[in-house]
Image 1 (cartoon, helix red, strand yellow):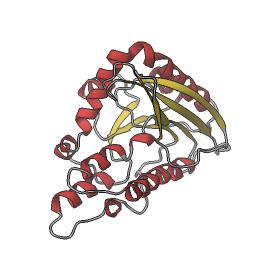
Image 2 (cartoon, one colour):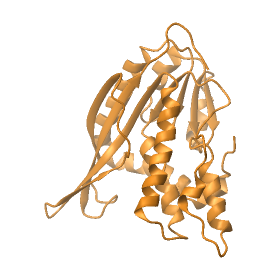
Image 3 (cartoon, helix red, strand yellow):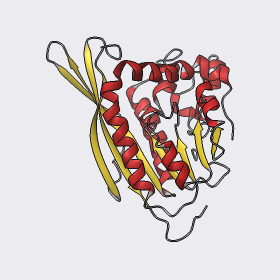
Length: 264
């Protein structure tokens, strides 16, 4: 499976965005801690229900929302998959023989394809949806119990922002691109025992009392399995949206389908 080179990730803003998450946590720690605790608690409750012996976390980042010690006691190996692992996390992972860091694109190759489409365009302008791939993420290993943690809502964000540097893109194309990526992600998860946690909408409240709400997940949320919902106070400084407090509605679902053995 192709993984984008670091220069592509840098030019598309992925490395900057990853560091930005860490900086925002330091600024908003008091408001984030409840969300992170809810996330970890839900993962712990869900993993008690699976019979898988190994696990894979998609979108591991700085491990802020992952109950690392508890998962290590339960799963071997424990794989962390991300586009790029922060150097601090690479160093930390050296202390845990049970953790395997994997650098992969969980869109299945869309990021690199989109980059080359945009940079290679001549007279004929491609469409955003031309960057989509047929199947999505298909790892070469058996992932076991899969945790998708606060990443599903981000699959389309930076690709669309990068695309807009070069081309005008209509709302319909953006929506089709977003839905396809999210649907492929959900289909992959539902083939396994999985725990899915994602912000599904954001609400911005401005100083003048006005507010605006936007859907982030463009699919019907899975209704089967254990579910939970909470609010995440994402930004109070106004740095995410000038002059606004931003809160996310977060949903979580635990889907278990194994019955006594792991499977591929």
